[in-house]
Length: 609
Image (tube, rainbow, N blue to C red; front, side, top):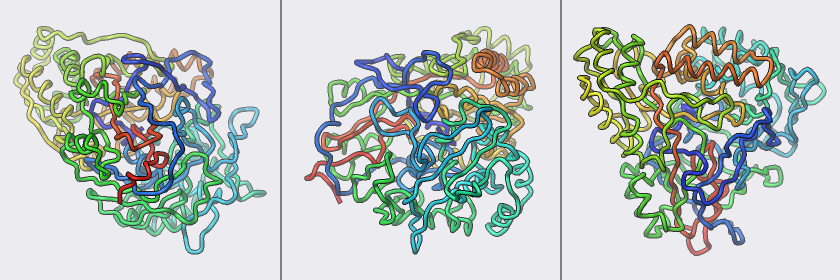
């Protein structure tokens, strides 16, 4: 959740249930049929304030116009790991399982391409999934999506050019996959070399049933109750063989995307605009996830001032049906009685402060645990949540796991103490530091948090200077590039993170964010944090025999990360959204961090152009 990197977008974003609640719904379901494998009661992923626009008879047709301040990381379901990336591939790519835009069921993974839930062996280590007949690629002529395409997609996820950032979630879990991926890193980063390697090398844990070309078989190294839910990740989506002609994640590939969804890419100008039109090869009878009411979806990515987008929506402009992240915390008080305002809930740590532990600046001071601890004492979480709308919109988070994730325990190792921070910096020999702060000017909250951090750390004698970055560059140019961190292009930054699945999802926080043995872009450990105690704890927890044992171990890992000052969490926030009255079926999708474009519909007289 991305890319979002799966990491979320580091502005006041997501939520816990009950802060502004008039009602709560949803589930932290852990398997495709919605069951929480732990059996424990956890807080719901629900809604805080839900506008009443989901009634009435849906109308087909028109153009859904979406405003955005930036682009996706990659227009490729097998490698994107960014929330907006998941949103962008939703119209054109179908997964084995997916999260439906149905109120109260947004976190219950449901069969999409699969005919049913996985067929699981008695030892819990073999999964069989059969793909529906009648699902086609928009090739000429159209071609049935097959189990071979699934194998191709999962193999591509660890390609050497642009691997999927969440590989630590499952590279150890699928039999033979880690060895396949390790060898893949030595392959030349050209389409021909990548294609040849995948053709010549099999993964013992991913195969096609020899008796049925529509059935893919996964063999695991150990039982894993969360694997069924993990299969809803877009990286497990099938991949058309035509995509092998292009480098994964490349600009050339983005211009030649093959679709099996209800839409196809008509045109794409990176950073400017993308237009999706109907895919004639798609059969609605096979797709329980996407209704595809609009004939066309156009995304304008040039809205640098998000307040302008909100004003257009309030004015009823048909060119602003939806606007990604256009409601800032300061807008909420004035909109609280507006039926177009919806304050939604998700499980997330968003944003949090990153420490670049390998920065050479200040004689490598950020590599010292005591320096990071001192900065943690110097940061004032109350100041940061205040600029994110206060605790009603941004409840504080003081450790790794949000309360809704199994294994979470509430503790705070770093209550604000400027005096203690100064003393620790002096003891560590880190007086008079100057730190570079990487942030996104397009986000008002990001800018304000930079200013707050600048002030808070200034009060303990640390100078903070800004490094502004465009949305599209923030991850791909800086955070996902270890060389950027190692060269000291930044020392501090903001990022955000949501679980890749729900329920027993602690693994999807710890492995991608804190396993120091795996560097970006294969992980999202952007600050290159590496602590032996944490690494050992992750290994022990992910090999736990029972859910109860795993939960206990993940709680210990949480303490280990915070004891090493691996990052500074800020909030598990609520996300305010807005839509005009003529936009209907605006069901918040946590995994997309917004409304599902493929399921909203427009009034007949407001269908734009």
